[in-house]
Length: 219
Length: 320
Image 1: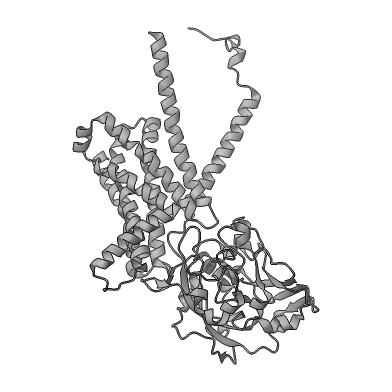
Image 2: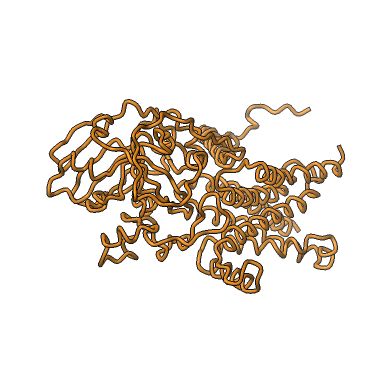
């Protein structure tokens, strides 16, 4: 199977969770609190796609199957896609739905009040602050994901910038951890996965450094 | 051809026995962790299989109450598939799937502490002489969602009088059933079991406070706390202890489970209060299940006229 065909399959599969949500909303297959379900599902899928994105390089090194790298941008952009859906759900279901509408729903005051409500909440609640920050770190990565942007930035600078995704994943786990009431087993699970994926990079970096040092002394 | 003899393997190259045993240990631990991680990540039931409670026995001779709200009650499906009942799992829909294993009959309640009538009471004795009333109450969860629920029950005050508390009885402590055979969620240590709640004596004696045995004129479904639960409509949902097996009259305020879990977030009183936020989220508004726009949360959940006097002079910011 060619990589191109595989990419089409991965793309379709990555749309699966969103398609399932749309189907569940339309057919009423969510819980009696559907807005909370949509918030949770989009949030968890953001974390999952971040984990998959971070797993690609380690997998490539372990399997030595280099074409894997050609999937990284796509899964990374899906993390951004689900993260954006998650953020929008919060803005609409949590903030917009809690507004007063003194001049009716379609009015300038609604837009103003919404902006105020969102920014106040981000400022006031640590887990929202963290979650918003995590989403924000994905924006420059999505914007510089095109081939043109990689060329313009240069591979080195681009690589350095895209290390931001480590922060995204870490903040994502903290955000999840802070919002649960009592049972932290799920955030812990994601924490372990992200920690392992980051530890792999540390290990590789240290091996590279040792190799370089050895090469210098050999000379 | 070079054939290595045993002596070519230097002793330094031989793995120490302790190390290779450690390695096995490590692999075992790592596999265990991986399994836990997989369970954690896959654990979110993402294809829902919530099942509304089957309809139970119809309760007879229920009278209407003037203490009921005129608001439209939530649907049976909503009230029986969206439950916080950690003894049956932490997801909202898990009690609807797991609470079938609860056996609400026969049921006994142990009465203990500062009272004359200590001992074990059958549920039938608890109900003896009581007129069942329909009480349609607003129900506000600390998680900022709410429902309107047509409970069936009777005043807790009647039960308290039966127990003949002494003058030392200042508080009541309630306990939920603690039987892992009936309640699979108890195997997880997410909370310290058994679930405990408490009320101050005047709160317990207030006419709004009821012991609930039914929903929509039928026997209370398991996932809603069968066969006997509390409803204190001006307090957050976690005060409404379910499947009560023990009632104890005490001098000091009991340590309720959620306060024990996180005392900076959940207090003893837990009165619905839009002006005192949960440390992590706002309590100013709530989502009524079934609605899109959020409602303004009312002081004491809208029961202020009846209950505000219980707390006059108290700092509700401190006594959250």
